[in-house]
Length: 259
Image (cartoon, rainbow, N blue to C red; front, side):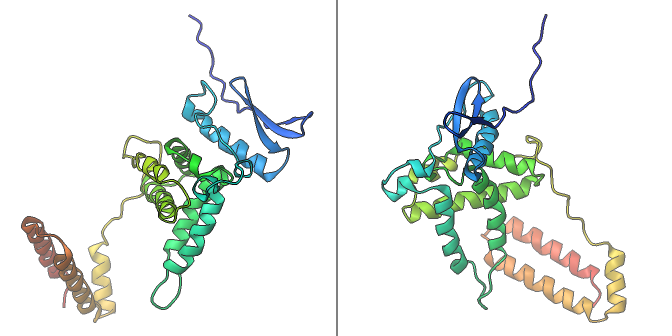
């Protein structure tokens, strides 16, 4: 029985001489990408190639992409590009994500990391055309970058929150955010994403060394652990079994720390 070989070569980014546009052919269907050699055409090529495996390479990508510059003048909720939505969100984030002293929180850097794959693949795409399959393409890019599974789940959640903010401010239709909610988190053992290294407890010998070198260290650590446990018990729901478990763990931990 003859088994056809799978072709792993990617379709070429080519010049359509008559029009001067870049072109790529997927399963016999030509896709015009914009002016050949332009950054926009390169981004569109990257987007189509990244989305192609989602359709099983049996047909053209499932969503027909319309660049924002071809959309015409319509209501902002249907005419904004992904780049425009991100730009508006970023202006708001610069004000919202600040510490009491006025400095930016680390959340800004996390959003910057999560939005880079989105902008590269879909920056020129109309936000109203961004759906669950497109979000999974962005997630696949994160997997390809070697990000760990837990980080990817957090970054995808941030991408969703950008669209939630956009819906709140009527920059995209509500149905877009509702559709993105259907994309589930990556589950351990069911994805190609790498796992993060487990956080191991500090060796007891290291604790003892710090106690000898810094005599006040034990007192400080006991106080810190006590405050953390008291805060946890005060803010958690009324699960008596869980509260007892935390209290017992606290007693055991404190006994290990010499006063």
